[in-house]
Image 1: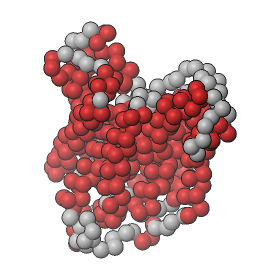
Image 2: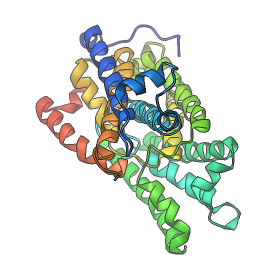
Image 3: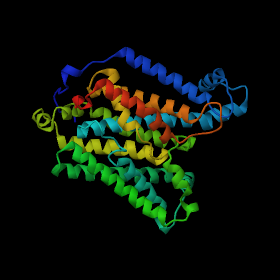
Image 4: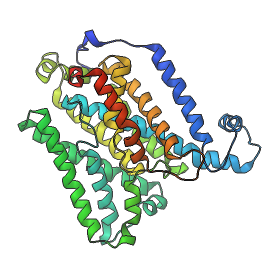
Length: 357
């Protein structure tokens, strides 16, 4: 990955430090707001005091913040970062503005992997029961989801050897996604309603199901996947210029594809395993980031996409918690309702998303 020359498209580069500062400020603000929301009102000054390692005026507040709200907010940050970067990798790999983990069936592949784990042994096991067994239970789910994602992505890439048209490839990805969903549906059809209740709840998406003692697993998987993506910045810039041109500049296209598969599988599979399928984020955030930064240089886009994804999912989680009530909406539904109008606005403003590829 490091032998490539500087193949960055120079006419579209540029780092905007002020934008990164503003994104960090927004991320910090939304993180604090997210911690302040819930059925129990806790003053922001107490939240900050607890975050700095101090003692709260009420023991219950400290337990709520540390054991419930911090894991939820941190999960939102990791999920937003991972799904956004996964979408960016897919859009660059396929050079298609509509590509993303959920569109190409990668998220559905992760769901199939989780469903297979729940079917292991000829009986249906609650995903939450598996996670509660130990950290090993969570690792099993993460590995199954990542393998499911990788299998779907690998199948699409194999087909791409024969099919070069991006739109056709996108339709094939949609069909593969529908096929995996159909397999899960057959399993659900032959199951009793009480047996699949937990799985159905999991499919709605949730950021509040990761226990504090297993948060590090989510962090490790996300950091490995994100680290690989960061190391792929130059190869990704090369792929934007076309495979033939990238090869002429010394880029190993096959090697880059394999690493992109590994990174995307870890990012999409790991998050789907813990939070359920969350749509929209992977396809929308890269477009929002390109619109904000005005560049397609992945050395800028990847860190900016990380921040933008975390901000978006924290914001959506705040809306999902319905401030002022005890109701919590499915996070996947909220990301679609909030994000779709934003994406439509970006498309209308930029008029030609394909120009970025």
